Image 1: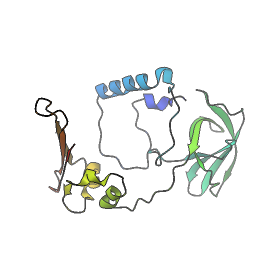
Image 2: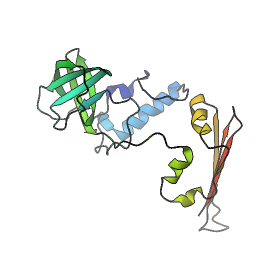
Image 3: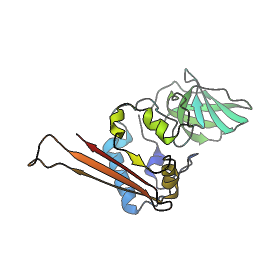
Image 4: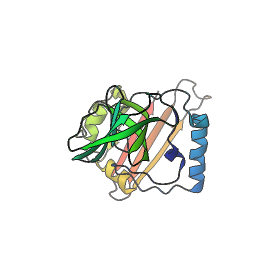
Length: 214
């Protein structure tokens, strides 16, 4: 499986999600390039990725049918381009070639998410596809999300102001400060360690703290 070329550029990409303000430096981009080289030598991953756990941050504008013979490009909620396989399915660096056969007004509801690059206005290349993740309601509040996870003992010493919803707003507004530290002193005891974290919103003054000992 190959890494998409746009992962190696410094250009911003499209996303339906709201992100906090980030301004990576040249050094940040260099570190990113170094990490990609280690993870994917020659731009090829050493092993296939696992299943999607949630929808990708770039959205799902491309989908594929169950047997991989057709792919769909969502233009708007009422316009979808359909492409038909031209070459046999084989996931190479170049990708499998598809050509456009129609534009329809209803969603064909293909079940797999597809990674596609547009070769020409009428041709596209499928690099990979995988089943879409199961639908998970986004209406859960902060406390409900924590309660849905295993090992509830992790939150025995969690304290936070309000209902915790301010955390998301602080991340988006870039007003969240996080400080954490751990302690392990082998000379005192070799089988006990501890750590703590503090999250503070500079806009609201709200705070979250949590400690762990094992």
